[in-house]
Length: 256
Image (cartoon, rainbow, N blue to C red; front, side):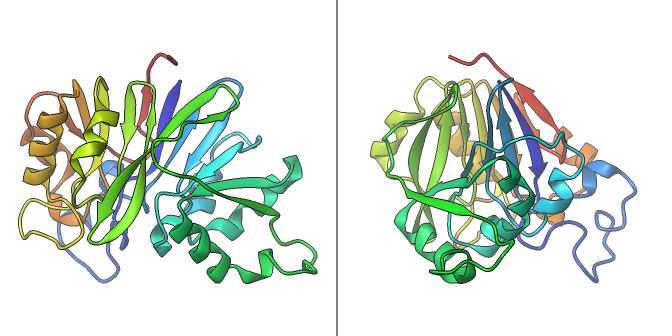
C-alpha cells in the first residue's frame, strides 16, 4: 500500500500570495505546498483523502483511473472545495464520498446543483455517505477506520489504514480515541508552525509531544505554513524519526 502526499500546505498554500519571505520565494520544489490532500492506493483500489481547491492540479500528473472513494476529514473549504473537479472521474461511475454528518451537510450546502431533483448535464454524480468514528470501512482491498479528532470545537475525522494513521487539522483528541491509534508505525499529523499557539491547530512542539505519546516509529508533518522555514533547514530541527512531508512524497507499507 502506498500514500502520496498531493498537498502539504495549510489553507493559504505556499507560497502565500503577496509574501516575499525566503520560503515563499524559494526555488526548491520542497517549499511549494498545495492545500493538504493525499492519495492512498493499492494496485486495485484508490482512496482520496480530502479534495481541496488545488485537486485538479494535484491529480493531473497521475494516471487517470477510478477513484473508489473520497474520505473527507471535515467541512472546511481547503479540504472539500475541489469536489466539482472530480467530474472527469464520473466516467468510471458515481463518486462515493464519506465523512461525518457535519461535513456531509456542508458538501450538500456548497454544491447544491449536484443533489438537485433534475441534475444539470455534466455535473459530478456524487454519493454521500455519513460515517461514524470507530466503525471500519472496506473500500476494495483497503480497510480504513475513522478516528474522532477535535479541530477547535469542531468534530472531524482522522483515518487509520493498518499501521498508518492520517490526521490533519487537529487541536485536541479525546482520551478514548488513543486506543484506535495503538500499534501504528507511521503517523501523519498537522503541525502549523514553530511558535504562536493556534486556536484550532497543533504547532510543531505540540505535534512532537503528541506523536511521542502515540509512539509511532516515523512521523510526517503536513498542513504546514511558510513559517516552518526552508524545507531542508526545518527537517534538521526535528528529532530522529520526524520529517516534514512535501508535495509528491510517497510512503509505502504492508497492507495488513
